[in-house]
Image (cartoon, rainbow, N blue to C red; front, side):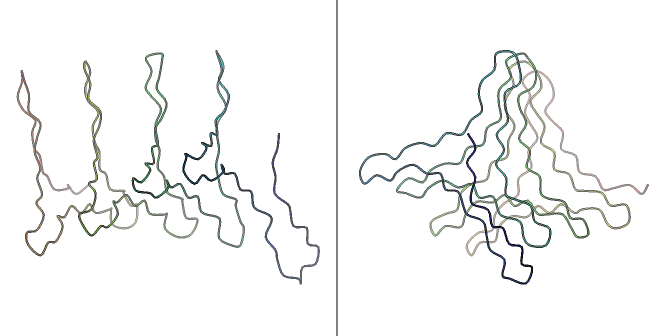
Length: 193
């Protein structure tokens, strides 16, 4: 089944533009019990490829395209937002999670901001880590600045926070080893190519 909003057909170019109708999908409210769950998923497949789920805002040629907002509800205990890629059942790698800003045809590309919210009693922690491995090598963490063909390459700034009592620390620690030597800590400046 296809659910569409009402379209606006306007043949008069001098008249005011109007917006098409919206689509709202929600479960019913509840005063005491739990509200219903909304599930959007494609069907399963035994041997083929399952369908994708695409949630996107519309394009525009002259105006501003719509935003895509993904948020959990507020409450005594706030809800979580979990984004998880699929597991692999055949020994291949698991699914990837890709966060990519939009490109600019004539301007700069979009910014990707990852931060915790401000708080009066202590802000949250931002963890960046790879998973552990029982047999193979654990994954690496790469923080790379972009290159430029005509200007300056990207800078990478690492700074601790300001505090009225004590400023934050910066700790760089190489990994320990059970059988071999511990990890190295290397800092080097760039070469002239």
